Length: 129
Image (cartoon, rainbow, N blue to C red; front, side, top):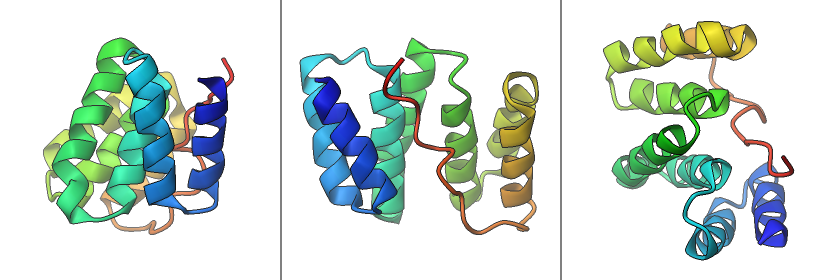
């Protein structure tokens, strides 16, 4: 299972989102309670387009249900809310991030106000904890 998650993370970094999606789905089929895999699956789905936004949101929500302090999930769910035009919920995630990871909070703030376009690697949750 760790190999699936590592492979998925590597594919995300290579921007091979559909392939990464398959790896994270396989990992979650073996253990549905992997918060980081839900976060990374949500990221892979979101990066494949608006048609995946609702499903992406479900996985971000599940990641946070499993691990309420997973800063990356708040960051990227906030980005998703911004893409969906829901600034109020993006700001709520920003507020939560202020306590968890001020650097990610600053990045999310930049996205919300339109100063940032790229999101870097921060959305890929650690797979080796």
